[in-house]
Image (cartoon, rainbow, N blue to C red; front, side):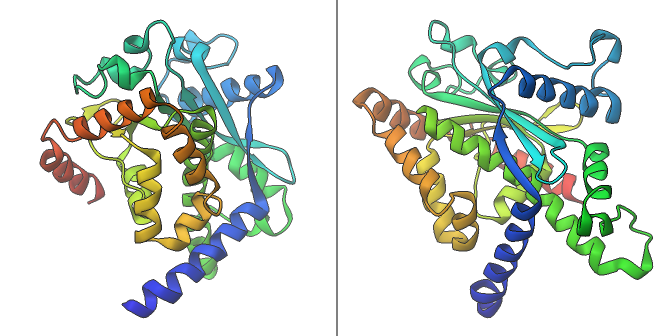
Length: 298
C-alpha cells in the first residue's frame, strides 16, 4: 500500500493532470461575450440535458438568477475547438447585506452562515455545470480526443473508457480549483457550498475536505450544505494527505499562498476566520450526513 500511495498514485495524478491540461483550460468569464456563454451553457445543462429548470422560464435560452449580479464566473474551455463545456461561479457577499447574500443561507440555519462578521469574508461555490453534449462535440472534433467514446458497452476500447472516466472527474475538480483560486485572489478565505455527494467524494479522494454544516437537503437529488472555514487550512491538510493532488490543485502552492494572504490581510479577517473555525462543527449532523453519503455511493 505504501508503494501505491508514494509512487503509483502521484504518477497517475500527474498523468491525468497533463492530459486534462493538454485538452482543457479554465478561464475567467470577464467579458459580456464570455458571460453570455456562461448563461447559455447553464441553460443547456439545467434545462435541456437534465430538466432541472423549466425551459419556458428562459425564452432567450440563458439560465440566470438573482445571485448572478454579485457573482464572478469561470468557464472550462476545450483548448483546440474553443468550445466551453463547463462553468461555475463564486457568489460574493453583498457589502451592505452579507446575511442575505448566499443561497445556502436560505436552506440552513447553521450559525456560521448567519454571522455577519463571517459572511463578509466568504464566497459560495455555486452553479457547477458540465455539458455532456458540448463535451462530446469537443471530443468528436479534436484529434486524439475523438477516440474518447462515451459507450460503456464498447468491449474493444476498455482502456479508452477507463481513461475517459478519470479525465471527466478532473473536469469538475478543475472548475473547483478555478473557483478556489478566484476566491483567494479576491481576498475571501472562507467558502460555502451546497454540494452533490459525487463532488464531495471526488474532493475527498484528493485530500480536500469540505465539512458538513447541516443535514442534507433534497434539491434535484441529495445536496449537502458545506462550509470551509479556512481555505489555507484546507490546502495544508491536502498537502499532507495527497501531496501530488496538492501540487496540481494549488498550482504548486500559489493558491495556498493567496489564501494565506487573504486570511491574514487584516485583524478583522483573522478574527472572522477564527470564529468560522469555532462554529464550523457547531451542529452535530456529521453522522447523519455520512450515512446519507454512503447510501448515495451504493
